[in-house]
Image (cartoon, rainbow, N blue to C red; front, side):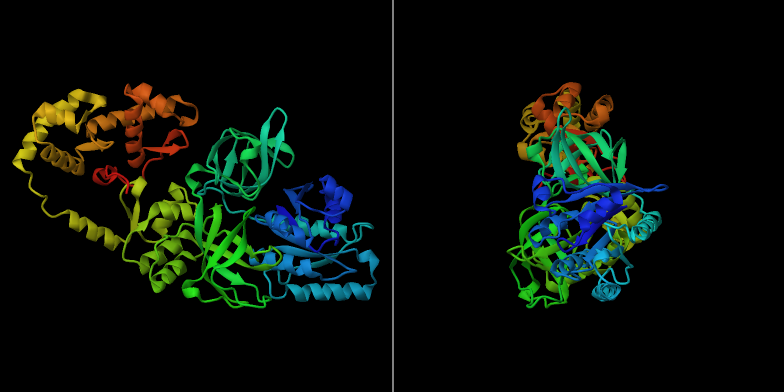
Length: 591
């Protein structure tokens, strides 16, 4: 269980964590000298029987709210700390607003320094705390009084934390790909670059090859440490340190993510549902400059509002955030917005569509789409999207937006009562009625073959077969067959559409059987390499072709869904969810 402190400066957060764990989370010299927390601190408490409780101690000073936000992005529980002598203070309210906007629903209010006040004052602060929480996600949270100096109330607090830790029921990490948010980076002598952070989704294992996003740097997990001990894997909801090979200290920073390659898709646009705090004096206007906090990242952005309509205090609306640098986000991610000077929290909300089209749609249509996407599950979102659109739904976009692997995507499609068309690389999701209609369109009598085309194809086949893996360009075929270029080109495109041939590069054609040979080569190369990763050079050598042609062939295999490129390497893709690729579609050049 991951627990974060929250509350005003000098209300005893760090002292309380030390009393519970024995660890002083103020590690920086400046923190020691000034007696205040500046950055995040971490400590662990192993329950006698049960899980480990990890504490994230956040700074309470208003100047370091950005650091506080990095600490509460992926927590199970919050401890809202209020000093008995001071009572509720400005950062108490702001930190509580942040927890509310992030929808943190499990928490405790801890009244510290209870040894400094009399019983009447303690009752008053407890009552104020309960009232403060009344309209937030932490409404009804227990209020406990403690003294980190005398130890009063600490046994009761430990018991409450133990019960909360034992009660946590995590959802399975299966079906989701890895997302790990980085909050600290350092170098260890003899080990290299180490990051610490939280596994937000999926799981990470020793030897995993991943990407640091948004940079796209390829890394390998050399070692994992959890709760201070080496381990072989960590899963969603757990903090851990990762020793990463393949990256220098200067190439990764707080705010970065370590992700499965399929999730690496930095963006500058996200569509969100945005809540403006009721305490704001003015409505949030179109094109307001803000500081956006999502995960452990902090960047500047603009808020674009549909038709320029402002969002009143206490209200919520869909909005688009346009960031000044690449953002890593997925559907369901919570975020916080602060004002341009980073002095005040304005509001926050949830990402609805992490990859919206830059093309502006009619307002009513986009409203229906966002309402559909803003559902509790991918299956519900798919069903709602299918009900509000007449076209097909792009499967890759849904899988990435909702972080679904192939099996989870297939399950969501089935639960929504929908079906798929196409191949893994270009899988489309449609209703059964749409699928039937499309199938009916394909059944009319095929266009009759031109006798000249048939004659040319009969001449071309043995030439292409003889050329083998080296293939023949259109010019070479034209010269060998003494045919007209345009007629030959039209014939080959028709054979590609029929599935008998495939185009590689701009001018080279292959028989489908030769492409199948290349697929076997790719499979054999992958099986011979560690973790199934191979380069274009590996494929070139095994296929016996030149480097340029090897790259072109691999690009075709990528489009066919046979291979997937990750940086300078490739891996075999899992089996497609449907049948073989539609050859005509897959051989078209990219738009």
